[in-house]
Length: 130
Image (cartoon, rainbow, N blue to C red; front, top):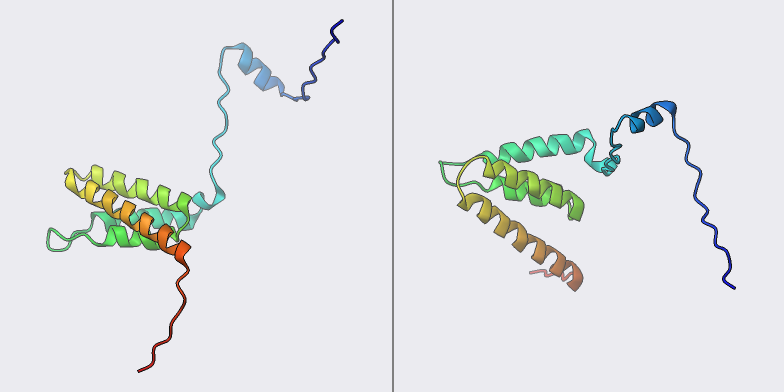
């Protein structure tokens, strides 16, 4: 004879306004969880500086500042580097042109591969006097 099963569900308190909203046909959306480090003045300033430095061109052709600032501001943290990389690519896409975003993407991939590969090697520090 099979044993009877019982499902125990956790208690969930809802307010009356949520109950009314669900009855009216509204869909309750889940709250987006952003890391606290992305919701700071430091991140907002870094994003603004990244947009400006990415769009800055010297003599109409050279644009070395965006990739360099991305590498420094990311600090080797993967979530921060992904956010700043996405912002940098969006800033270049809206500028027009196809090759500049591709060049930046290639530079970001190369930097990331070298960064994580060289971190694993742990090269000894050698002091050369002479």
